[in-house]
Image (cartoon, rainbow, N blue to C red; front, side, top):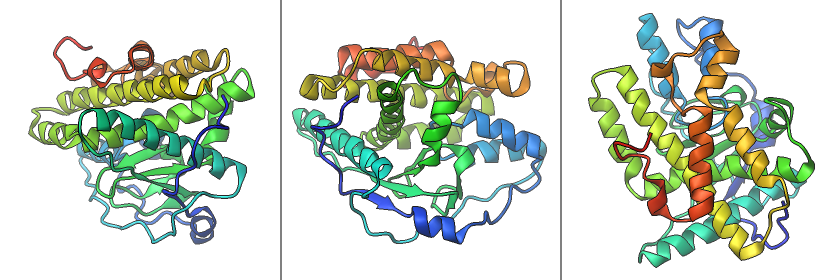
Length: 301
């Protein structure tokens, strides 16, 4: 993967140094045991919206309670970082801004880009107290993506690793593009609609099934970005897409549950199976159109 032609975004907020200095995780996890927290961490390990929802669900099942976080992210000046990892994040984010602006413009709409907050260890947010173990996530309450960049090292070392440096970079870009996909859903009004449906759902299993559709659509939107960026820049090297599909396969709910607890509980899926994640990323990458990512239709799964 090459980023030479990408434009760096000015919407990166680098709070890594300050958050590492603050340290600590306030509030704990209520009545949850460490085993439950580990399983939750596996399920939401890579790409989650508002991971506190998973904690809430677990608290309900265990008879506990978990209040929503009302913390605002601390103020940080936005701008492209100067270290290689921060620069890479800014470049990928910048290209997602350019590609999605073009897509929105064809529909006579304006794309409003999200902020991306880099942190180290933990960070207060309006959605949840972000922790490294949660993986990256998008918070619709403040329209920010939260990312601890130590996650990229985990990405290389877990679930089979990467075949080469270029492939690793594209897997990292896929992570960012997925979270941007959630912001696109928010801009299109999909997230508010699904959240209302989840609140009205009759069971946790039904709410989870809705969440799966949201996550798979974000995978598809990540594929759309890759499609449009490839047309614009020809930035991919041989093997990059295969690595992204391997990453998608590795983080399916079925595989994560099997590895984390030894068995699979489909009703607890929140992100989709390995095959579903691969399918929807491929769908977006091959077709490059928002209309190809209708995971909400009855026969989509």
